[in-house]
Image (tube, rainbow over all chains, first blue to last red; front, side, top):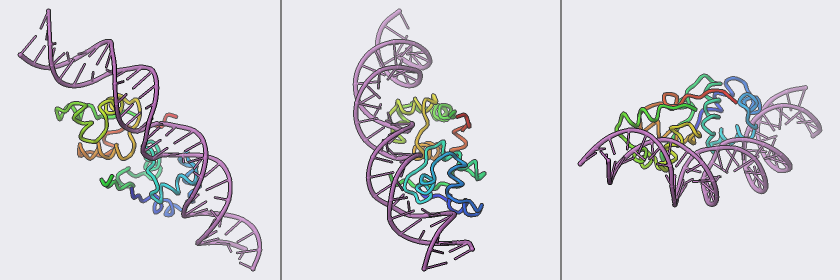
Length: 66
Length: 66
DNA sequence: AATAATTGTAAATAATACTTGACATTTGTA
DNA sequence: TACAAATGTCAAGTATTATTTACAATTATT
């Protein structure tokens, strides 16, 4: 699942670790999500969206390709 | 996490099993999600939202409580 | 060039979404 | 009232996968 986290984050001038601490996960988790290695849980997705004052749909692009 | 799935579903006249088959999970999973026993994965949340032509935020209400 | 800061990634772990099955309760219907 | 359909739930197990830990590689800074 693609997402705009990297853009949003660097626009704010934040490091992966900054973002990680802000939402309560490890830095590597942020990195993995940014690179699309796996999807965040729904709560984590909400925290990310809320932090950037965005909607989940505005950040994550879901494609039905299983 | 609260959600409006039950309302949306019964408005359509669908049974839990109908919805379950439509998004590819078991009936008990739908029941558990409806009752807030656990949160769906992000992909499952997207499938539910898409099926009802709604946004995730329009269906799921996230609260920052622990 | 050297050091620090940031990012990338593999491997292991933890968490939990989800299933299956079974049975009990409720709600609808003949 | 009786039967069927739908929902609730619970236990237990599976498996998927989100997340962590540790280390390598890259990028920036001096």
